[in-house]
Amino acid sequence: MTVAPPFPTVLPGWMATQRWYAGKPRIPALRRVGGMRWEDPAGEVGIETHLVADVGGPAPVVYQVPLTHRGVPLPGADAALVGVVEHSTLGTRWVYDGAHDPAYVRALVGHVLTPAAGHPTPGLTRFSVLRGEQSNTSIVCELDGADPVVVKLFRMLAPGGQPDVELPRALATVGCTDVPASRGRLHGEWTDESGAAVTGYLAAAQTFVPGVRDAWPVVLDAARAGTDFTAAAAELGRTTARVHRDLARALGIRPCTADDRDRMLASIRDRYAAAVAAAPELAGHDDRLEAVLASLEAMEWPALQRIHGDYHLGQVLVAGQRLLVIDFEGEPLRPLAERVRPDLAARDVAGMLRSFDYAAATVGRERGIPDAVHAWRDAARTAFLEGYHAIAGPTPLDDALVPVLELDKALYEVRYEAGQRPDWLPVPLAAVHRLLDAPAPLPPQTASDPE
Image 1 (cartoon, rainbow, N blue to C red):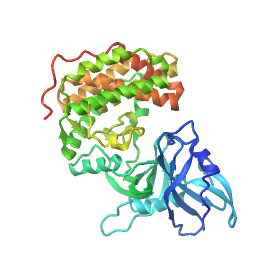
Image 2: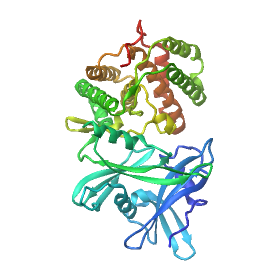
Image 3: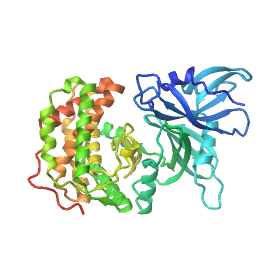
Image 4: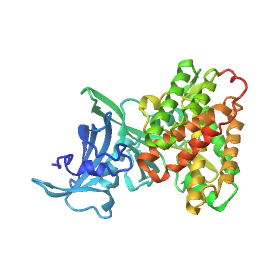
């Protein structure tokens, strides 16, 4: 027997403090839409996954919340405590975020991994939750007799496909070695607003490469020391281009139509409006934005393909001389239908340029001098672009599109920082002003044929 889910009491307040909850600063209004119960072989821990819809915002958002219920506190797990509740039969129960409880993680591994032919699913020997994850929770799992895996627990759910599952699998079919190998996945079912049953991914597993660092701290260390990073940035550009090339091989490309172009330009206008609402000091750039966008409308745009969609230094692992691209989920605030839609490869390029800007801003904030490493940043950005085009080839329209897509990303960042990290708002604000006040020159002619 397990504890009834403590929705009316501790769960909403706890969810409101989690990095993966997108409705901040509002406390969620929760409605249970699905879930499952897991078995603890020892019979001591209640293990449940709750799928709950936050119905207090403009549109319902479904979250996955695994909980464990224990009769005594879990040693070392105070930070994962959701609350303490009283059960009419079991008495006092300590409720934990399941991602930090070995009982839940052991059950999760048993269901998510795809065992090798003729072999049972390996058992869990040790696990740790990665820090810094925002929209999801990643758990590194050491296994008995098998290579370790990292299991990503999707917190915000959407019915249908999940790019962080499907894109790595597609890349594997064309022999791409720039992403970790896929090791399994887990589906779930819940009810939508109409009460109809829908399905989607709950978790996915990939091979974990020990001893790696994500590129963000590596780049910060280099920027702080003033180390020449151009060779590494060029390799990052080449890796990015190879992933784009392999995604195109695996999933195809298609021409960018006038409707596609108009939709993307309208999206940038919407981003600008949302950014101005979040940061009114941006108001007054309307005419400049329209002039930049109008200059693109008559041009023939490059072909569209599946892309990473939320590309930055934190999505790249450094494994010695090798780089691995991870986290293909796309921007978490975009609807799933948008994240699985073919897009411009230049959007990922622009995202990485924004990430170098954030790295420079971080070091500048540490030193109290905002432009302390701007020359270092600019050299790294240039080298990244040169490395990318060494593989992808010249794309004339990129000189126009990349700055506009970088602007689009900066507008997204304005809205995000205003809601999540107001102290960082000056970073994307400065980028928006820079990109609108001094846009890159547009090419004199249209791009070549998309094919």
